[in-house]
Image (cartoon, rainbow, N blue to C red; front, top):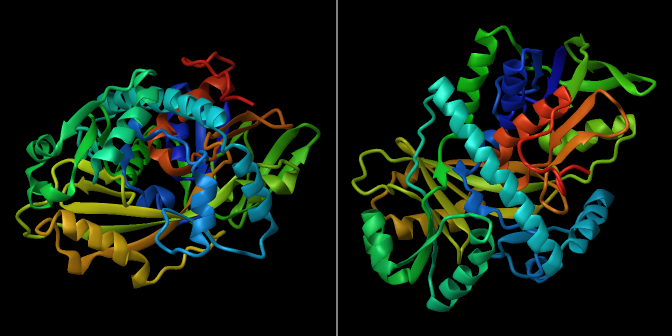
Amino acid sequence: MRVIVLGGGVVGVTTAYQLQKDGHEVVILERQRQVAAETSWGNAGMIAPGHSFVWSSPRAPMILLKSLVLKDQALRFKLSADPRLYSWSWLFLMECTAEKARRNTLLKHRLAAYSQSVLHEVVADERIDYDRNGRGIVYFHRSQQALDKGVEHMKLLESDGQEIKVLDRDGVVALDPALASARDRIAGAIYCPTDETGDPAKFTRGLAAKVVERGGAIHTGTTITGIETAGDAVTEVVTDKGSFDGDAYVLALGSYSPLIAGRIGINLPIYPIKGYSLTIPIGNRPAPPTIACIDEHNLVAISRFGDRLRVTATAEFAGYDTSHKPADFSFMKGVTEELYPEGADYGRAEMWAGLRPMTPNNLPAFGRRRLRNLYLNTGHGHIGWTMSHGSARITADLIAGRKPAISMDGLLN
């Protein structure tokens, strides 16, 4: 079967890889000059089932309301003339009950844990270098009260098989001596030893090279302008570089998926949520971090990719705007310098802003909608790197008519 994959981010490339493993001919269409050039480039790089809690929680509405006045909120809502923002936000608010948040978090964790196991299979088979760090992730708190609440909160994931360890401040510093100077500002942490990190763009580009070596085609610099249909099927994808036809099609365009799907009458409740990141060379600094962490008080995530740090923060409801200015990064940079004063060459930090494709319940969209040969694999939100491999395997299974390895109850709708 010839399968056309729309999108060359980590989700699209992993999907093409899994389809190729099944014996299909694959073609990837990507509008950027290379794969993994947007969201897959600038994220935190965390493979983090321990970070599966959904954003649509009972706390979210008040945080968003405060953000209209206070600018230091982790979730920021910007008033806009875009009607889709308000319709999507209403659906998001409908998911912010305790019962739905618990259900959606467990579904997300199921997918994330499965995806990590698929990643390990791919790594074993392909030997791709992507600056992997398998030492886990530290989720630290700055007060004992916050730590106690965090431990209680994490029991939900622990009940679903997530391994956790609770560390006091001495335990945190013992795990990463680079945090020694910040010891007094850390009360303790939840340590997820099975979480890991790695550069998603480096991995995606390495995997894409494998796909091409095995006969797959990747058309970069190719913008999709339309989808042609006849009856209940897609007949071809139209681009600025010509048309591409196949037996099946996979929509993996992240935040841009609803714009293309809407042209063929498919309504996808996906909205772009803007995130910011810094990539900072370590240079000759003597005390860079040795393990990834999230400062839960400030919601700043810090990962190390070889000779670089990746720092991410903020979720801004700002539409398709990816503009940024130096002031947008001053807080996250300040937090990182406070924690690791000798950790990186902060004067050479590279700034980036990109879009997370969020659904109201924080779960990706799978399967078919109306058209029998168009499959969805999109809407992975803030942990797309974590969920990408499992989502790719699930999509390949659905196209083959096989039952996926995990229950799809609640994930397929």
